[in-house]
Length: 64
Image (cartoon, rainbow, N blue to C red; front, side, top):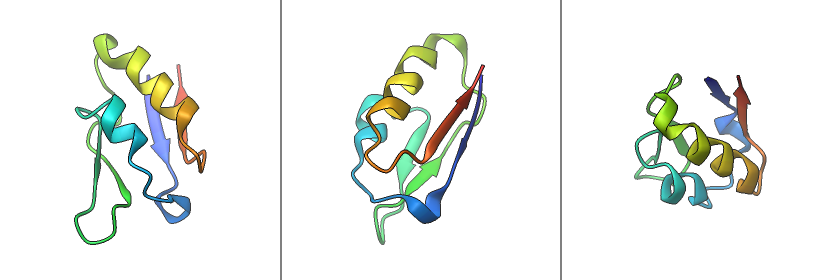
């Protein structure tokens, strides 16, 4: 799995951090998403896919 994101379009909702905190975080100053692990282990794939699916700004792209 490879994750990319467009932080410029992030609306700082934080859903991704709640669902996959080992993979995503938010900047303290504005809440914009930060990618912690662009290639997470298999045990986190379902959470990452869910985070991408619920992102209101659709900024998370997941490739198999």
